[in-house]
Image 1: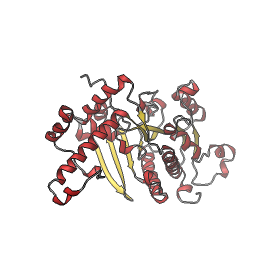
Image 2 (image 1 turned 90 degrees about the vertical axis):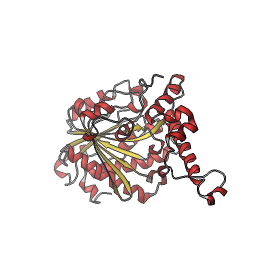
Image 3 (image 1 turned 135 degrees about the vertical axis):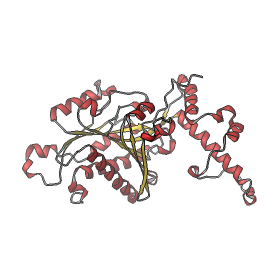
Image 4 (image 1 turned 180 degrees about the vertical axis):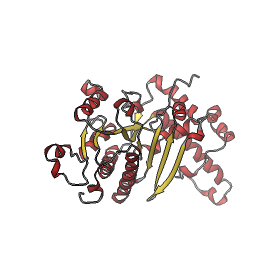
Length: 350
């Protein structure tokens, strides 16, 4: 088996760290904290680590939330509050102030639902550049100079996304970019439920193996803050997660054998996946043979080796993706507005 040529698709930095152990682990800053029952991860990746795991060095924040699943208004507002604070932290890290001129870019294809997050966010953000051009002296305190663009995809425009953004940046002379895009994840549990914010930029389409020219501080010459949500997952990942779930379920049943009262239970049973451990290597081999002994990375690579050449490693999205994208776009656009305009964050403009 030649597993090396198959690269696991994930745009999330902490997933890449989990999958591929690095010899420079001491250089990684990996913190986790909680706000309003939401889990926030802060990861700082050095150049050495980035080179080993295939991620750019820099600052990564990840907001994990189940509010997108419940679609509860109050919970979604908590997500927006937390995301606002994260974006502000990244803006400060890049020395971006309210006086800086910004361009918000929504990457993706508006006609493909899982890829439409960026353009829909652009429809909702508050743009103000025209106010500064027409009557700058009448612009209220607390409003920043912000413009926005959804450049579409190369398949529709025939133009590299990078080239469109570069031309606009040069024409209107902005100080920073905020780029919003759909990503790919390595875990089914994170699809439409994780928001990543980073100062390392983005490569459009990289999550689905269709990478375009990188949009970053190195290529653009100005800070680039990328906000992304994994909206798709590949078939190999789904297969791997399903097998893991099966192993956890079997391990749960094994543990129940030592509890006589549980022996009377029959039929399917819902288990807490995150709290149920995988069985040890001996049991995994008993259940699945040599496959059960593979590491997480090698297991997915083997599944990709089987599925990809035959055209079966499809990208998949949940059936409720329309509602998820609607909620996510409101959370992200609201957080961007509040991060860039203090007049919005203070509730003067709702």
